[in-house]
Length: 105
Image 1 (spheres, rainbow, N blue to C red):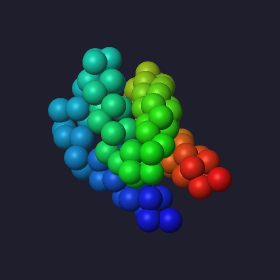
Image 2 (tube, rainbow, N blue to C red):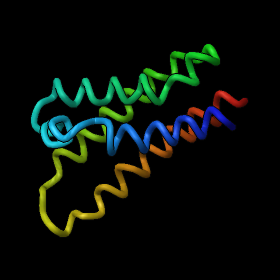
Image 3 (cartoon, rainbow, N blue to C red):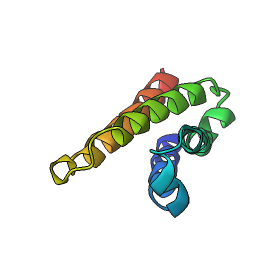
Image 4 (cartoon, one colour):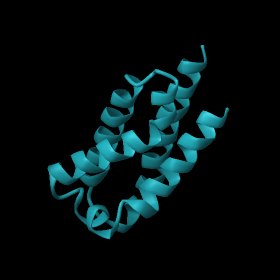
């Protein structure tokens, strides 16, 4: 259970605070920055996976984070799309729960 708490906390900290303003503003414009963001996010969130010897799941976290953020960044920036952040975050949380559930089996 501690692994799940760590993964959720590190997601919340990194996806909102630690990614920095430059990455937050430009990851949707430059694929390299999105790649770096998704990779570093997956590495930080995946620390418990390394400790548990389940490090291959970091690749799953990276790919799903990359695809989700890529999708979100390519949606029109209009006021009626305010809900996209909720979809984006729901997918990120879902992937964390999926990984946690599978490693607990």
